[in-house]
Image (cartoon, rainbow, N blue to C red; front, side):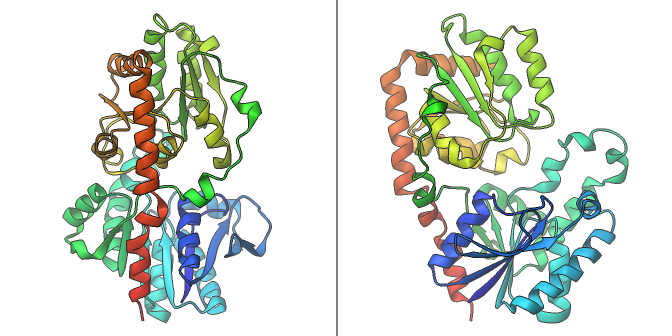
Amino acid sequence: MRIAVFLDQSFPPDSRVENEAYSLIKDGHEVHMFSLNFKGLKPGLEEVNGIHVHRIKANRLLYKASALAYDWSWFHKQVAKKVKVFIDDVKPDALHVHDMLIAKAVMDINDTHYQLPLTLDLHENRPEIMQFYPHLQKFPGNRLISIEKWKHAQNELIKRANKVVMVTPEAIDVAVKDTGCSLEKFISLPNTIEPEIYLNYPVRKEILQKYRKGFDIVYVGDTGLRRGLDTALRALKIILVEIPQAQLVIVGKSTEDHYLKEIVEAEGLSANVLFEGWQDVSLFPSYIMGAEVCISPLKRNKHHDTTLANKLFQYMAGERPVVASDCPSQINIVESCQCGLVHKAEDADDLAQKLLELYKNPAKAREMGENGKKAVLDQYNWKSTSKPLLAYYASLP
């Protein structure tokens, strides 16, 4: 089967998108990707790990307009023109749209001209998480963008799709309640790793040299304040009393990093915090290998409670114990796999106590790391978790 995949950004990188395409190709399908080329990568058609990537010209105006995609119809009208040209050229048997941003444009064109089976793949509950975007906290974003319109649009897109892929069962439960759609319409596909790709990244010695002989705590991923790194910094201040050599290594970035750096300065933590900035996923195993413990201190909200960051599985694959906040989806993984400890979200004292517990019990920490690695190899890997998606595509005529 020839599958047209639609992505609202430049490709690569995107681990989830690549993993899905990789699995579909291994299962005998041909994958053509529509990729809005906002980053100015090599234009035209390029094959990336077996994926036929069609980079579609997209200018800065279109990028800016994407923020108003469900508040202003111009964005979808422009994208729809590009979508039709692409579908006419590729002649796919099925459509697979990642996230909601360009989903309306794809669905409108498909309904009008093709009526192909269409899968909507929601990586996150975008309307819920948009509430925490910095540009929606101030003028003009807070006046121009309506969260309620985006919520309504997401529910309508779910209803229109033939199949909907979501990250967790918890997210599906919310969608079923909000839309009234049948549970059978949904597939749960967490952001697990593809061991054949992830575990083969080479270890970089220059990264390992940054670690001290002590207690190194690693965080990888987006560093927006909703991710809880302000809690982690305050927990670090507490544990330094007992572990003066402790170090927090932050691998990622966001527009809110200046707030984190202000906390570091105010708390006198400069000697114990490394801001590594955004790094390619291929370097994550090296950073994780140097850690004694890895953290995911997400703050509680409707989105975080129903999603799973792929960092959890990256930590587990690296055989390191995890300390995660008490978002239900994180609790389910950490406790069922016995791969770490759970702390109360936004509670620096509780996070500090959990970190100290692992520091004082290295055998326990090592066992949790081993449990996590085993869970990834046995269950939480892409080969296992992608089976429902592959079965669905195999069922299509």
